[in-house]
Amino acid sequence: MAKRFENKNAFITGGSSGIGAALGVAFAREGARVALAARSLDRLAESVHSVEEAGGSAIALQCDVTSRASIDEAVERAVEEFGGLDVVVANAGFGVDGLMTKLETEDYRRQFETNVFGVIDTVYATLPHLVESKGRLAIVSSVLGKIGRPAMSAYAASKFAVCGFAESIYYELADLGISVTCVNPGLVESNFRVVDNEGRFHEEWTDPAPQFFVMPAERAARDIVRAIYKRRFEANVTLHGKFGIFMNRHFPWMVRTAQRQLTRGRLHDFDRSAREKES
Image 1 (cartoon, rainbow, N blue to C red):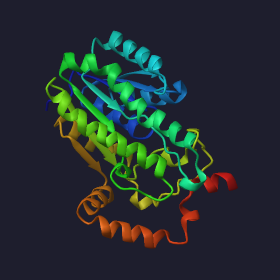
Image 2: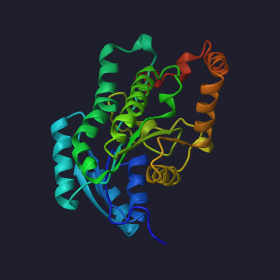
Image 3: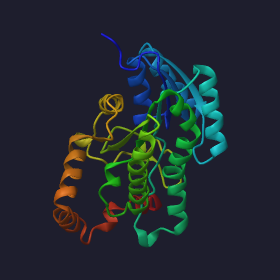
Image 4: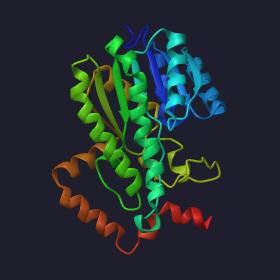
């Protein structure tokens, strides 16, 4: 049986953990050569090892998406190694948590620098190669790019921006033969919920998400790869994520009422930044 991405080249930011690392394995299993980019070379080495264990080929590229020069260098090295790019997944991101009344403008700016401008710079840096290959671009947003949530205004605002960016360039890049897929995961197995507002990973923290809701990263990656291959615009990942987006699209008043009742008088319980200060 033919593999979907046989002899194709994929470039993935945020490839050291979570969805990004799982996507590396999933693309490799579909025949692609994979370039995994992230800030930590040590953790990237683990991701590359996972790809190789799955029978694939991968390279690790140190890259900070808040620096356009760093992205350009990583892309250049990937192209030198592979000869071109067929798939780009702008996945790097983190979450600034906290009530708006306790955050400052700088917190929002830091969030947008990675989650929005990091995505935009990744697109610009890889665009000439996608034009040449008439390739596929995937932008990883979130269910919270469709639904606002208390104590997550910085993150949600950045992901709403990413969704709007993806939908707008979907039309523009279509004329160049490039497909755009906007990926909106719900709760997926990752380090996302044990990273602080400065983007630092805390191994000692416990993931606060109900584990029965959390989708294994490997399964999420398979769903995402399938959507990218089929050049779908939107990939809403996890059952609860799909349900939430559906409800917010068709019954927004119901979603707002439910969230208001859930958080009334209990906002502190949803504020991870408060827990960080207490720990």
